[in-house]
Image (tube, rainbow over all chains, first blue to last red; front, side):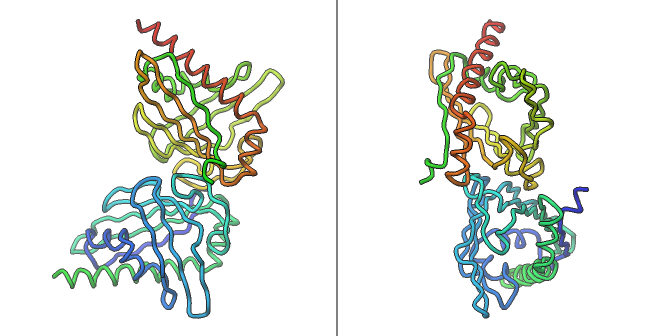
Length: 166
Length: 166
């Protein structure tokens, strides 16, 4: 039953796990890849500890703008292995009011990383929903395309860091 | 603004912090004090780690019965210092569907313990809500009386353990 409530993206990224983790967890990097182009992240707060804030502002060429958005909450941080956060709670674990768009339903993201050998990283992102209606809403918003594009951009940006560090 | 969304109970319990922590975190103990008498806890699951389940079943002499309830989620465990859990998420951090009664709105409980000297323990429980309407609903359900009674029962039971261990 559980997996019927989830949406999942998996990729093997062509960059080593240390740089993928860095790319995923530093706000200045997140701004570069977390929005599917041509959308942009113009603001990002990430306090990388349980109870810490995770908030982005996304804008688009068509005038799309999430505004300051509903700040989410970091739940679990296991360096180079796992990052979990949720939109159901805000910083300090306070339950969130629903917002609009992607903030109109609560979801939890569990992202895991594993060394895939040869300087590559296995990346998996699971979006967990409370019921199948929310899962479907998220899917119809373009989850697979959006999170898929973003996963590819994550890999590209981490690879650029690899090259820059080489 | 924040504290206007919270409900708070504070007590100095006449039992040492080690036993108060044990009383608060072992399901077989929780059953003895977590419901304001004459209500009873007939089932309790607590997996004491982030992402672990926290679930109780409460019954009353008037036929009151929460059933299996909506399982909540442990968020933070700092031994003898802090325990945080939420009803906004279930085990594994999946967002929860709303239930009835106390499960009809999400809240996060942050419980802290401190050595108050002389074998006593300072106990504080904060219930955090998403908005003032939920806070008010919780208050009208009898938060102060219910959580207050339960805090006193926590102290009594921990003291019984103290005596038993003496």
